[in-house]
Structures are given as structure tokens and as C-alpha cells.
Length: 405
Ligand SMILES: *Cc1c(COP(=O)(O)O)cnc(C)c1O
Image 1 (cartoon, protein in one colour):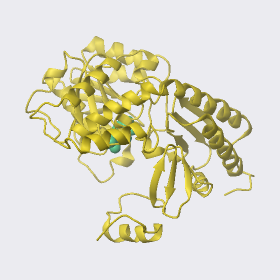
Image 2: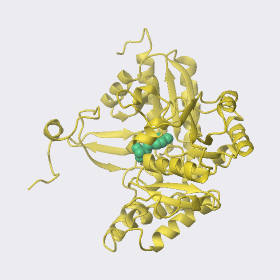
Image 3: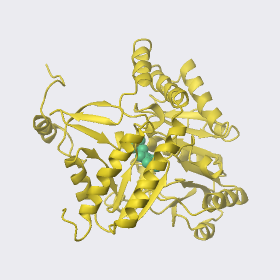
């Protein structure tokens, strides 16, 4: 019988070589267990994980309230379709609405799906001649074809053309350029309030507020992709609250369900009916397990005061990494908003990621030269210091003239 008990990393890698489509670049490590900000591999090695679940595990690995919620729900009702009502989906929508802008929710299973729903909603809600959506260079919106077309990064388009028509790309942070792109066919603006995959890019002050004004002036929907920045990661429930600019549509996924798959679109009540019956659906969307866990995620964040913890832990990273940046010539810039941390380097980041693994620390590199950390919001102060100590050593060694790789 095929089970998952006891294979070594090498044996597991062999299974993948034969049976799994090789569309990911993977590190040769087979992870078997996680707890908080630690994960263990099949050989028993423990790693401090500063990138848990690629941004999905904002509560760390296997948070107890989430484990409990799944166990209870899975024994009660696993799945029913959206031809019926479930209290859990309704309560989940209410909790999200009350913590955001009082809107209504459409549930799906991933970030890219949430953005597909947003793209359809933009076209359905605005007059027929309006179909264009302005998106931004360096942005990332997912891997389905609509979201791929919305993602203004040529490397993700190679070989896939012709792409879905109607996306217009603007430089991120350049309000004037956006203004020039708006015409009678523009339906919406889709933007990450902080670019994640693009390298933890925080737009200049006033940029998002300027987009809000522009959208109001021309009758466009302002749509924020908060798949990475949302659900508590910045220390507010949503990154739009950091800057007090309320969108018309917001998309969520990644950490929405404490590590279980789930996605959502939230929109204002006057816009929501445009996604009318028959025009959009997701079979698994808002299923009882995702809904129960979505509720448990919000409850855990509130009961454990984790939004406040984000401010504390973020402060440790800010102080330590800025100190490091002063002495370390490899660091160009440190960008931090809550538990979104980018360290831009003068050198490629990949060797540093490998060196970190060798020291039992898991980090990420994006855009070639940006070290990206998306730590769990319940990381401890001690763990944050431990991580910064290690990063300091690794970055100092990586400096030209240092004795590292
Ligand atoms: C990860 C991400 C997505 C895609 O989410 P999936 O769940 O992988 O489809 C979309 N937008 C942003 C901002 C993301 O970070």
C-alpha cells in the first residue's frame, strides 16, 4: 500500500522524477512535519521557516485552532455545493465584511481564481464598451490565462500567446502614466497595494489615493489584489487600511484560511449583483472546511492579538535589517511593511537562499536580487533575532570580498 510514512528525501525525489510534472524548481528536501515557524525534513533536520507556505501559513505551521476546526468540520460535513446554504459560509462572509468595507463575498479556492472573478466583475459591472483593465509592471496576479495576461511581466507570457486582450500596463507608482492610459474603454484598475512577488515594492505616498480619485472621476472600479498583503499580514486586516484608501473590489487567498486552500473576492453591495447567477461560479468555493477554517483564522488572530504582534516582530526586523544595511554593502535597500519583508541586494539572491538552507533557515528570493521574507505573524521575538543573526552572517559572507560563496 502506498503510504507517506518513512521515505527518505532521496526516495521521494525519485518518485517525483518519474511521476510528477517537472514544472517547479524544487530544493532536494522532503518536508514531513511542521509546528509554528519550524518544519522538519524526512531526515529529522529542523528548519526555521521565514517563508512558511509561500505566504499561505501566516499563522505558522499546524496552528492548533485551525487543526481543530478542520478535524471537527471534516467529520461533520465535507462538501456541499453552492445550490444550498451553509451557516459557515454566511458567517465567514460576515466576519470578512465587518473587518473590511462592509461588502459581500464571492468564495473560490485560490488567488488566481479570485482575480478571474474580479476581471469578470469589472467587465460585467461597467457599460459594454468598457473592457480594459489597467495593471502594473512588476505586478503578479496568478497563473490562469486571464490573471497571466493581467500580470505585466513578459517572462510569464513567453510562448503562451495570444494572451487575453484588454489589459493595459502602467509603471507601478506612476500616477501620471496611469492617468494618460484611461480612455472611454477603461473598466477598472487592478493593483497590489504592495507588490509581493514583484519584490516587496511599496508604492510612493499618495499613489493609491490618486488611483482612487482617478477611478471615481472616470467611473472605473478600483480593484486591490490583496492575495499576499491581506488577512493581517501588514498588521492591519488589509493593506488598504494602512493607507486609508478603500477599493471597490478586493481579492484574497494565500493566508485567508490559515494554510488550507481558499480564496475570496469582496466587493461593495451596490457592485456585487453584477456577478449575477449563471455568470460565475466555483464548485468548491466557500466549502464547509474552508469556511470553518476561514472563521477560525480570524478568531485566532483576534484571540491571540496577532495583529499587534506583527507590529512588534516587524519592528525587530526593521531595526536589525536597517542596522545590517548600514554595514553591509551587498544590501541596496530594506523594504518592510508588517510581515512583508524585502531585502534588495547588489548580487543574485539564489546563492544566499542555498547558504541559508545549509544553516537551516528557509527564505525566498524573488526578481533575482530581492530576498523576500513572509514570516508567520506569531513568530517570536527570539526567533526574529535568531533569523536576523543568521541573515547578518550570510549577507556579510556574501559581500564582495567576504569569504562566502
Ligand atoms: C500568489 C498570488 C496570486 C496567485 O495566487 P494563487 O493562489 O497561487 O492562484 C495572485 N496575486 C498575488 C498578489 C499573489 O501574491
